[in-house]
Length: 469
Image (cartoon, rainbow, N blue to C red; front, side, top):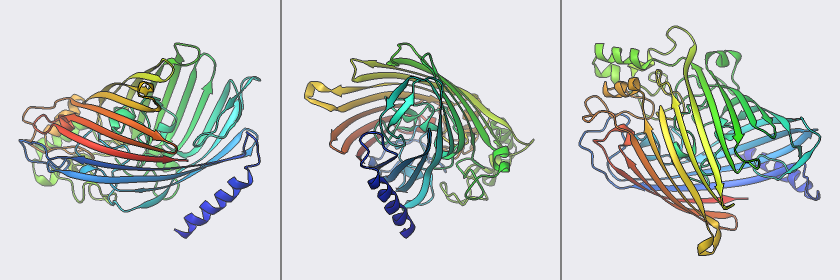
């Protein structure tokens, strides 16, 4: 901890020395802290729970994240950013049992104790494409400066792909908007990351008046919900074994980007097991040893099971590296009356091979909105609402019915009497903003959790406190 305090002191000293600049500062410093308390009462289940079932008894959990955002200009059009982060707490049942999980601030980690780590450490280079410039206001990981109106932006280092892709103003950041996993990001986008959502990547963004184009290649995890490197930094072999690519284009339907669509394609390359092959294994070997997960369902020290059924785990890497999964995301947003926004987001992946990192959703449709509360004389407050419908591929669903477990869901053999049903989620949230703090009471209604109509529905009550400087 002394090292963390020393780094923080140096950062604050550098930041303080730059305060004499009138507008364009060579450094930036921001801070956020978010607490989320959640509770779900006991719910009905006509079947016994499996290794990855949500506990049908009442549960309550508290999670927290604390992040420092430091940025500095290092040369002309070159920037450096560093985000140390502390996370603590966990989700219901170890963040398992619901595909569209209820708290985007939690991770699938083995310990709820506070953990210090580097969330982001990256460089950004801007290459001008036009002489005309526009002012870019300061924000988290953004320096206040004049930038070319048309430009290329290269980002290299450690960050989250969701920092750059699938950006959705209405619902994207669980620290300030909706909490559910299938609403904060495209549910079927199984993007490369470690268990906390970060990875090492190279991103190129082209900003033109007519469109915005993004491309990224990133290191993927060594196994599902695992690390992206054997050590502190990934090796060329880590990248060769597991990586992913994303390509996204943003097309404005209005010149000021108040109405636009985003189209994204993605492909993941990793040693993913095939659902069809795993089903055959489960049918040929019906023993518990071939189905049940060995060790803690959320342990990261899981060299024997890798968080899934042995029937799937032993198939990983068969036939060598390959592109294990591909998919598309469509995203539409429109601003209404300057302060209100509506959106629709659809995502799909082929679902032939196992879910690797994000969550076990192969197809998802989400619609929602946020409304400013001017009529009750709270112009800085927002009311948010969204509905998502999540589904699985045929092979993925049959794998669960055969008794297989993914790294986040699975109710066990014989526990799907009604087959696989769509997981439907409604979320309602109010953001009460005052100075540097936002308090957000939140309600989620989850029908058919983990695609099983024999369980639930589940009611989730949340209270989030978010502080930002």
